[in-house]
Amino acid sequence: MANSPQAAKRARQNEKRFAINKARRSRIRTFLRKVEEAIASGDKDAATAALRAAQPELMRGVSKGVFHKNTASRKMSRLSSRVKALG
Image (cartoon, rainbow, N blue to C red; front, side, top):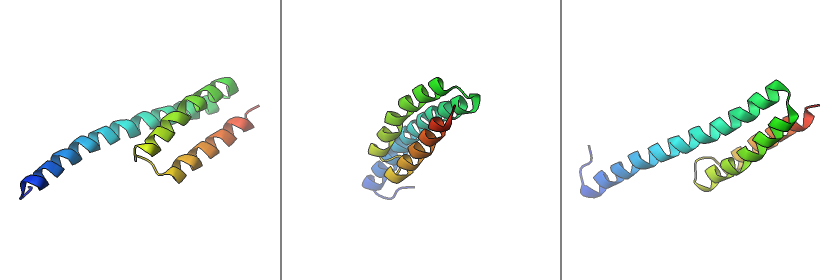
């Protein structure tokens, strides 16, 4: 329990921010999962399209502070190399 008005306000802000970040993280994971599924199915066109859709979402997560820049870059690099390797 917060002992001061400012601590109470920070607690409210943290709850709100947590919900927003959770939704954003979930949305990004959904985009990444679509890329993974397209790669697993072996469809290069679908995988490329899914990757193009996922990239701005992932970078938006970086700018909003949900993911670290290097984490997003690593994920994009690994996914793009897997898409590129598809026949």
